[in-house]
Image (cartoon, rainbow, N blue to C red; front, side, top):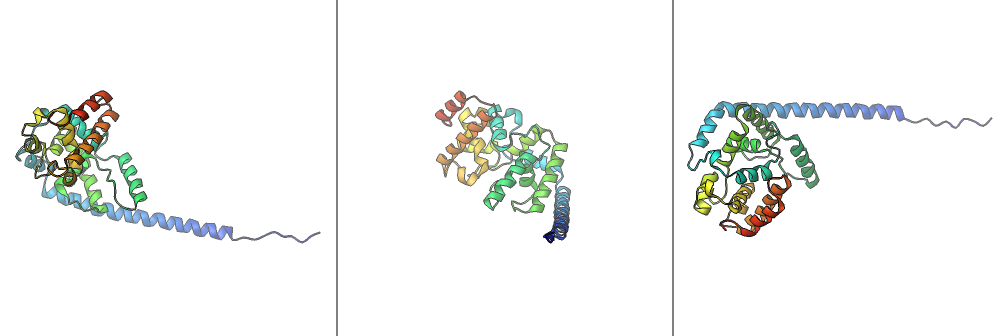
Length: 248
């Protein structure tokens, strides 16, 4: 009978080592997550204690150019939601789908190229935190957004947002932007002006009308595409608005 040629391999020790390393990695991730969540929660709690939500709301409402949401054109509000946060009326302040997509794109790019922030998160960041891109600041922003959603209605959040965002050229809030760029009250804005203004706050230094009107128009076309994609406009109306331009 031929001698046995059975081969012995270190499969089991290797498998145990891999399993141990995997468990160790999971524990490290959990500890890191706990650390950043705790730091973010502390930032959120301190920020809220320093400026309660009602005081934040009042500070925006008494600012020059504040415009109640019922005086804003529906198309402008639809354009803001379509281009900034199309699931705004469905999520609780934090959009897991958008955040996951942004994380994938950031990992592919090797840098932060997409934020995934909701309108509520943007309001929280602008009113309470710095623009610094840190994990704990992002966690604090999420906590604040969730709290805002419990305290305000969606329309109140949208009203506070559009009255406090920056439009370039020194104009803060939709009322001041409407008066400064077009010399009219927000309720007088036409469709071209509504869709043009909706796109500027994404990058106000780039899209400010005094500096880069052509870039602002390109951004307007993106806004119009989003309005069509989310069924606020049909293709014919979007083409008509894009062709007429603002103030036409």
